[in-house]
Amino acid sequence: MYFFLLNLALLDMGTISTILPKSMANSLWDSRASSYLGCATQLFLFLFLITAEYLLTIMSYNRYVAICKPLHYETFLGSRACVHMAAAAWATGFLHALLHTANTFSLPLCKGNALGQFFCEMPQILKLSCTHSYLRELGLLVVGVLVAFVCSVFIVVSYVQILRAVLRIPSEQGRHKAFSTRLPHLAVVSLFLSTGVFSHLKPPSISSPRQDLVVSVLYSVVPPAVNPLIYSMRNQELKDALWKLISYNFLKD
Image: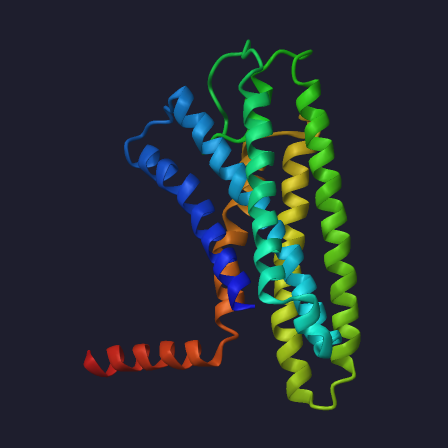
């Protein structure tokens, strides 16, 4: 689990670092300018890191095996298997980002060059392309959404099995610990998938600048920011260390 948490932490940190520093700098300088190459680079890195978050599917499988089939854990999830699965998530993210970025920036932009978003988001770039030019990109988006749907179904099924196993735990404290970590994680995954799909496939007729901004923040900023809290604060040693640090600073003041 800690190996997967390390990979997830790198993905979350990279996602935040890809979009927030540039948007904060633009806000401070009261500018929304971005170079063509800079926009393409930001889009590629964002798609790469956010797609590799499919690692969450692997992590749900890891928890399913650990809780429901603990005696077979080493057989199903040995060190080599964990490395291969994590590498597959990173490779999938890289190929997905490369394909979408190359395809998106090969489209002719015939409706200006002003993005109505705080970062280079693919739906906003497609709005600037000619009407007849972005159908192939929409096809790729539909395929990506289908993959996300399959992953979400897998996560839900694995969590149903986990919850069934947790309900059989005789200790009330054990059930509370399991529910306190699984349910917030499921809520964040649901938020990430639902808002991401809505942002990329919503009809233009129901789009508005305020709505686009809120939805983009919900899938691009909130999950990477919340994931560390969900996974780290369940660690008793980390909570004890944080409490000691707070107590020390309070007494020092």
